[in-house]
Length: 165
Image (cartoon, rainbow, N blue to C red; front, top):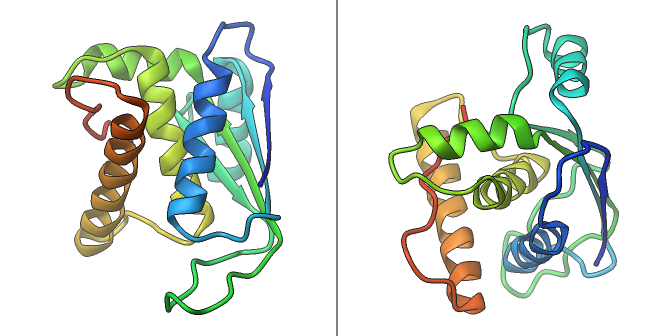
């Protein structure tokens, strides 16, 4: 799996954890090991510009996903996953820090960025949360991936509750 993490935000973030959880999520979703993903960490001003340009919404947001080859997880366990470019995930640590502080289960900016990375991966794979059933499926899968990764890493305590809007 080729995953690039590029921090352009000026904020120190745990790039290795972002890389690790993205790799874990893609493996768990059975995405071809030669597929490519880019994660870009930007400041609030850059995120606001992307949010306005692509969503026509004001203000910075926490995560945006820009799919390329529209890869999907294989439908059966014995199906060969397709290979390709997943696309880009853009994260904003300033928004992540605020969301982590305000969450029911308060957590760090880095924990929020890990959650947002998984959220972005799922969006790249075609998951959405517009409808209640879609939201239940996506957020359930997101929690299972984050919890699985945390357990594999030996991290204790509750995993961050979904704060993604």
